[in-house]
Image (cartoon, rainbow, N blue to C red; front, side, top):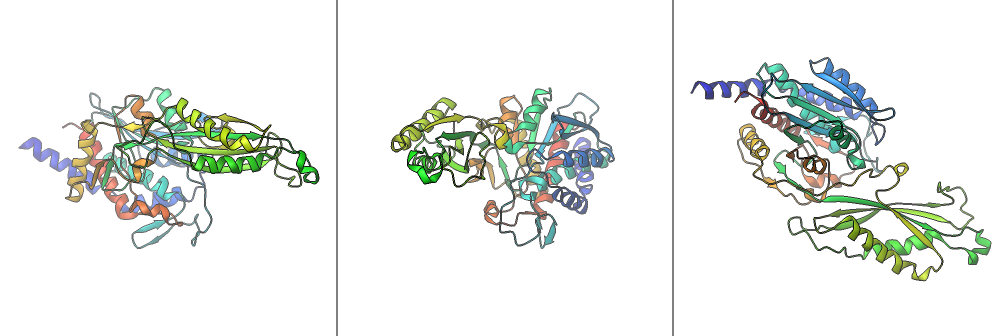
Length: 418
């Protein structure tokens, strides 16, 4: 009875220390930083100071020359399990059509608007709020809590791969991607990207009959790719997988794809293909599928050649790695820890545990963590997943608060004395 009373008291102490306004202020501060992929160092420097001044042991990791990520530690007294809270600080490209200033976060009702908050600075703020609550509560932890604000998740996990390769091996992890405060996700597709470059012959369009038009050939390739059925079969666990998207095209002249000479027929055009796949697809099968489609499209463009690079070259700022398929067994203890904590916080069970549609068609750092032997789940604030269709990005404040409290209780149970 005393043990149960002590545990209940510890839970109450932790929950009382989740500071809603502090969490909102942190999210706003992060959202004001323009941390596009490869440009995340400002967030690392900010978080090093923020967490260091609040009693965390901090480390700046140089992932590439001049590109840093912040890792912070709340040390336990030893003998317990460690837990990583993982979130990325790079943000998606800024699309057109915003009705608000994307760099001046604002609150409207329960929504905090600002670019990068949905994916995923809202989740980063929530996991830090949970860690801070543990720090201030005075509860005794046996295991370490690691707060990893990583770079380059949008490049297929550059920061998390660096973290793993540097020797960080927690006993479990929570990745606060935007899957919803009532959803605990254990499955997502793999992501495989490739750059296709057509190689033609550039001449002035006065004599275009003598050219090999790289852009025109790519247009035919894209049409063929959009009709492509990937071999290896569908993944019954995640309906709609595999799927393919041509998300970027750039054409021009020379190896740098110079766009200044539109009076010349293009001799180079590059398209970046993103494939979300299941366990039935392999690198070899997807490459072969692309070649089959490209070869068919180029039957009407004799003499034109192409190359496939997977992952795309680094200067194109897409994948540096490929995301593996993530499929965590539901019997892994971290799953029940989070679901029980969510029940304790909200009084209701999770809406989804396992597969979420459309969420499980996405990909993220959990694939790398699980491949390295680190059990992990996806749990972070999102609101309705259809929110991704709204141009003005936002995160629900209520979901941030639920996530912060659930993460804090999960960390207490995972790393604590009980």
